Image (cartoon, rainbow, N blue to C red; front, side, top):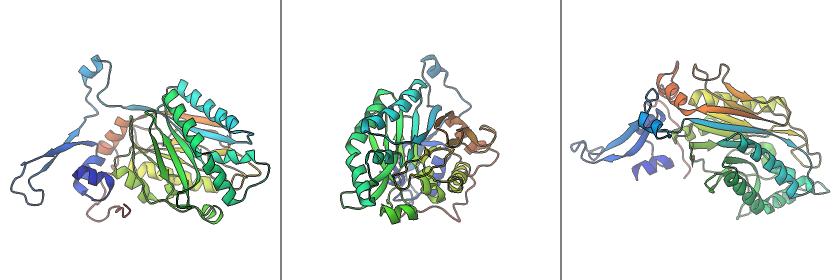
Amino acid sequence: AYFEVLQSGQLKDPVVSFQRDSGFEMLGLLPNYLPGDPETLGYAAHMLWRNPRYSDVSAIDRGTSATRDRVRVVSVQFLQRGVSSFREFADNITYFVDTVGSYHADFVCFPELMQLQLLSMHDLELSASEAVDALTGHREELDKMFSDLAVRYNVNIIGGSYPLRQADGSVRNSAFIYLRDGSVHVQDKLHPTPSEANWWAVEGGDRLDVIQTDCGPIGVMICYDSEFPELARHLIDQGAQMLFVPFCTDERQGYMRVRHCCQARAIENQCYVVMAGNVGNLPRVFNMDIQYAQSCILTPCDFPFARDGVAADTTPNVESVAIADLSLSALREARQRGTVRNLRDRRLDLYQVRWRAG
């Protein structure tokens, strides 16, 4: 129960959090370890650290591995163009999922506001309220489509995001994560941009939780959220090693804000960051007039990783994908023995991220 409270963010334990950030796995509690210690009530944390320099020969002989190391991720740079039906939109998505499935990808990330392509089916430009209601009306078939694709092609899908009307009438920019085990997760954008707030009346969410996958815990930050370092640190404190950032930017300087911040998040948290953006245009759809993107997969800047901290990227403003194999053991080794050790060297006696939301 204590570990669950720590995982939820309701309680902070700098010692346990530090060990978890350093690659230790929580196995449980040992009672009567220090019976005379009133602060711990005699309990000790039972933790496991897997040495990245050690190979489990018995596991290799069985054709398995002790822990999942190599993870193949794909970022889709998606071309916005008009569609005449939901089926046409679904065919575009299926094409990419089918393609990344043939590459045996573990994750594929689609861009923020990708679903606004569905608004091009209307002959006239919709008002903000009409657009939100139209997109909300597609939720059921979107969920079914993406869930079926995730299971059929055996890939975890970060399915972009779109403005969604909530049960209380409010609007949130919600990202949907469809895992290949059939489960569906939702992550709301916490910081709507001024444009989102003014046009769609988007309100920010109040939760930011890691999502447990078959490749370890991941986090999702929608576009502008990546520009707030506290959010990434909160996800890393929960154990995330990969952060996915679906984004939507209209011109280069907006893109560079997100890009520079994502690279900083990768360095300061010693994690991988996957960015996926839109290109092309939808003339009759507000906020999708023009797009600028160079989608990419970012790494820390140290010897085990790509020279420039970029595992893969796309040509700017061209529909394409970026594919990279990411090593989780390289992250653990960098955190423990890297040239710099950003997570280990934090001065938790001076500062830490405190999460106030439930």
